Image (cartoon, rainbow, N blue to C red; front, side, top):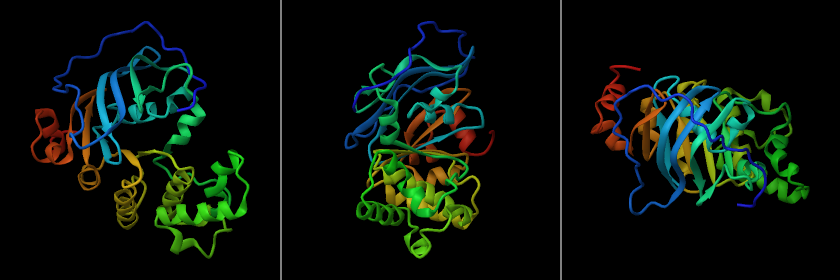
Length: 284
């Protein structure tokens, strides 16, 4: 990863975490899986409030990893750590530990945050197309990089929209506003916009929470297709969605990683009673 910008890591570590039972040793992908993201003993704070406590897990390449847990458990905070979106919050900081992508610590001073966010795209909970045409939404990131060749842009637009399973629905209206699409189409447009710059990793923060069941099914099918080319990390409150979409699942509670394993194990034979209580609906 080319080097550039960063923020200093505070050396002090404020208040200790609340006690909680957690059987969460560092979990590694299976022997056939190559790790792309290595999170190692991460503590994260908003001001004096600790949001993440000693988080360690490895995320495999070209798989779907789901973060689940009740509201406020830290899963979205951890997701935003993976492309340093939390840098935009003044009081937010990683106090200890490291997050590595391809063995490069993304919080080191020589890391270019702009380059990092090209490689680690993000799709938010609420679809947020720009108030521009569908075509301009897709090409926006490329134009920022100085790409202006129309033939190349046309090719990227078609490839990205096909990749987001949206091409057939919008190919005759590329120059109309993206805001005129349905909610599900807007979310797939945002996914197309994210993949247009060819990231390696796509982060999805509850991408279906505002969608109806039909639109949700289309996005879930898309996630399944995209993992052949991209590593996907998804935050979801919908446990059925995690079970359907993901290869591995991490369960968080009160800022701690309680259990991380392949998805079938988490839902069918969890090793921690808290995990079992959550996935069975007894709390959360």
